[in-house]
Length: 250
Image (tube, rainbow, N blue to C red):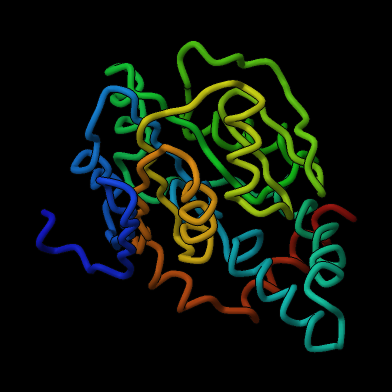
């Protein structure tokens, strides 16, 4: 399987005997090729990695389109996000998720049964934490880091950052910095981290954050939703938005 992977990024840290690595794959099961010790933590992004919206509406690409529209109007990135969030939340509370692969749920369950720690790291915020848990429950996706406190936790970060049931809701925080804050707060330090995300920038953020930690990093740029993202139909999403609003009003 490894010879099919496209190597995107390779950095050598000369003071270390291990090398951070980022590869690309359209299969979640690729993580099995990189579990190098029992103390390995597998981290999954949610949107367009483990699951995606059942419609164009509420999809990650729809949200990005809304943000880009606001930036085109002259707003900065963070302000554009805040403009887009209210209708995004509304859509998320009305549109379910579907798994990216038929095997997604059973594969994660298999990892947990083998006592491999599994968590999610998402840019979704604490304001949709409950809804996200509900959406994941509907498609039978759960996470577990054994021997790590599962109580709700708000981390001291520049933006709201919330942990619940092995999901770290990073919001607008840097994903790498949020993860390091989580490790420090929980006093939990895995020997290896395998992080799967559809966006390269988040893999690089986590790789950078782990550079000065004694933690080996492998990033997997999940490409299984690439065609879906490329074919995003903004007009269709707009029609679905109006249909949802009409349904709610009537």
